[in-house]
Length: 464
Ligand SMILES: *[C@@H]1O[C@H](CO)[C@@H](O)[C@H](O)[C@H]1NC(C)=O
Ligand SMILES: *[C@@H]1O[C@H](CO)[C@@H](O)[C@H](O)[C@H]1NC(C)=O
Ligand SMILES: *[C@@H]1O[C@H](CO)[C@@H](O)[C@H](O)[C@H]1NC(C)=O
Ligand SMILES: *[C@@H]1O[C@H](CO)[C@@H](O)[C@H](O)[C@H]1NC(C)=O
Ligand SMILES: *[C@@H]1O[C@H](CO)[C@@H](O)[C@H](O)[C@H]1NC(C)=O
Ligand SMILES: *[C@@H]1O[C@H](CO)[C@@H](O)[C@H](O)[C@H]1NC(C)=O
Ligand SMILES: *[C@@H]1O[C@H](CO)[C@@H](O)[C@H](O)[C@H]1NC(C)=O
Ligand SMILES: *[C@@H]1O[C@H](CO)[C@@H](O)[C@H](O)[C@H]1NC(C)=O
Image (cartoon, rainbow, N blue to C red; front, side, top):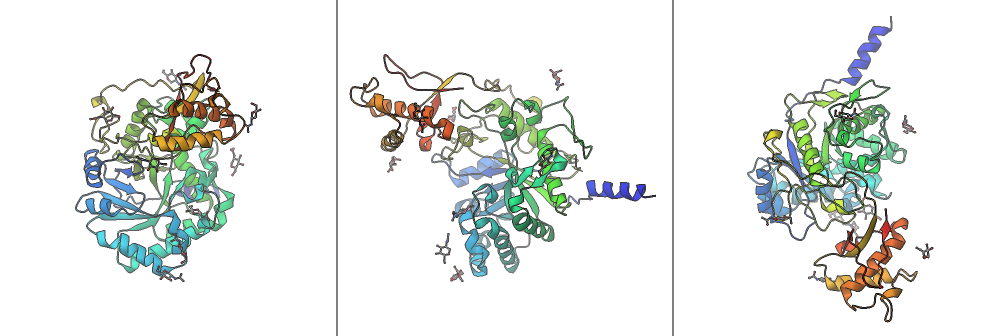
């Protein structure tokens, strides 16, 4: 009778016996520094402790941060920058030097536990760095062993775009352009070294792309009456995060690696964004991040449907709203803290504060797509020299973008830099949005729903 062996095998395959080992269910914080108004490194470490975080991830090997972490109980994750991956991949001496300079002086007093090689390498346009990633990881790991840094695991954080399919979760599949040459050697390395698959996973982006198809509460880990059953695995899902995590587990299993542990290297929800971005608000950010804390600090651990009871170490992105992050407004609004160190909303990463103790949150106002006109104007306090440069860039894109602000034009007066630049930004954006133009201009521009037109001067707008 083939039935019993089959049942046994498939049960074993679905529920590998994970040892949670020394992995405690606890939450870390991603400490990004892309802001020109952030507290000092030592003040930041105090704030991280006050938040109740137990781990911290940095995006380089900043000496001041690693110094400030000495003697704390915070476990640290340090990053090898993307730019040097290629050189390190072919030069053991260089790997040794990097580890000797950036890690050895701080270990073991700073509890460095993870060395992440590169950041979301596979999300960048294809280049040789992709194929040098795993060779560089091997060299870094060799250095780690050589210097006797026994507690350090080597990994690399990848975004969900490493998968070409994540739905249903059982259909999780790595992208074919990297599967054989990058992912397979990566999984072999992670398996052999008992490291983790580090994943950056945002239900926010998945939901914001398909807000009509995905229930918001399901993405916020706040749904109480929604269950999705994967038709192939039969597993039942009650939130979008579990679905996404399990799709990674199934993708690894498909390539023959069913046992590599997951580590959430980033997750989070933006507390604000541009007018044309849905669902980025304090209410949703607080709800999501508090639910993440609750889920991943639970004892006994909850795990996911494919790996019930298994600890998934988790880091929330990010410590601060970072005003120098490029891209849409949400990128600058993932912080738990404002740059002045005050909380955007109350949160306790230790998981010890019960929900009922938090005061009420401001109601969300943008959980539906914005409908109406939007203009693009100069941001308050923008650097005037830089604005002048952006003005001539916008006008230089041709197509008569700036005719009305030429002498004699309807918007020439008042003849001020800010007025002209606001006109040019709105005109540029209304023409070029469809071909990928954005209302950003290196942080000099912001969207507004307030019509800046006056008299005979009409500012072009984008209509949603
Ligand atoms: C390749 O991508 C990496 C980041 O992944 C980047 O640092 C590097 O400059 C790129 N190289 C080229 C030649 O574009
Ligand atoms: C990589 O090595 C080459 C040759 O030694 C050097 O010219 C280049 O500057 C190095 N690149 C980086 C990013 O260090
Ligand atoms: C390897 O890196 C070391 C240290 O930066 C450098 O001195 C050496 O020239 C490099 N070797 C090669 C073959 O590029
Ligand atoms: C499963 O993934 C493949 C790509 O790997 C995709 O072509 C297919 O549509 C997916 N199946 C479903 C049901 O979405
Ligand atoms: C879940 O319950 C709420 C409140 O009873 C209800 O409004 C909502 O429609 C339900 N959602 C689904 C998907 O059943
Ligand atoms: C910190 O910054 C936020 C956002 O700009 C502001 O609302 C808050 O009042 C500031 N707090 C302090 C103590 O200055
Ligand atoms: C303003 O922008 C100009 C040109 O981009 C730059 O050279 C200058 O340093 C900036 N000034 C300040 C105060 O940031
Ligand atoms: C230039 O303007 C014309 C008329 O408004 C428009 O049809 C065309 O798409 C514009 N070209 C670009 C590159 O935006």
